[in-house]
Length: 151
Image (cartoon, rainbow, N blue to C red; front, side, top):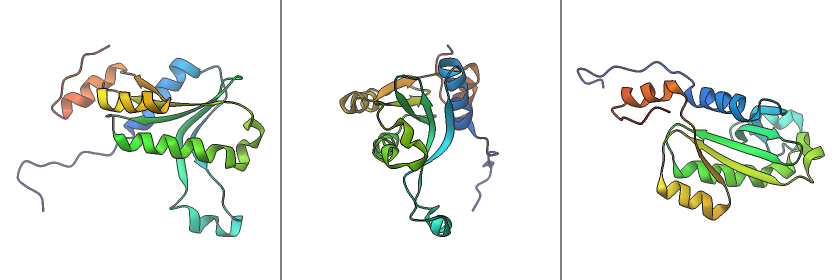
């Protein structure tokens, strides 16, 4: 039930845009994959049944020295940490990436706002906590009633 004054926001893929701009800024010279399915499917005939339970990393980058698994969130959420843990576990079992099995994996939690709690947990897990704020992010947060410094 809509309340007077409520208006529905149009869907825009902001996290995807955040990830894309970060990849361009930090990793443009390296091979990268976005919206990557991780894990295994018993066979291609059953793949459709598994689509709801498969895990999808926002991005994977191969730097030549390591694999970077990236999860992007507009606001720092604890759930993103669990996602990164699962992606790190699934990556070595993903057939499409078997040729990278000998490389170390670095997990990056990408967000637009600071969070001491999320950063602390990322540090405990050995994940990089990265705050990335392209110019359009300030407007995103203003629309939601928050101000963050523009970078």
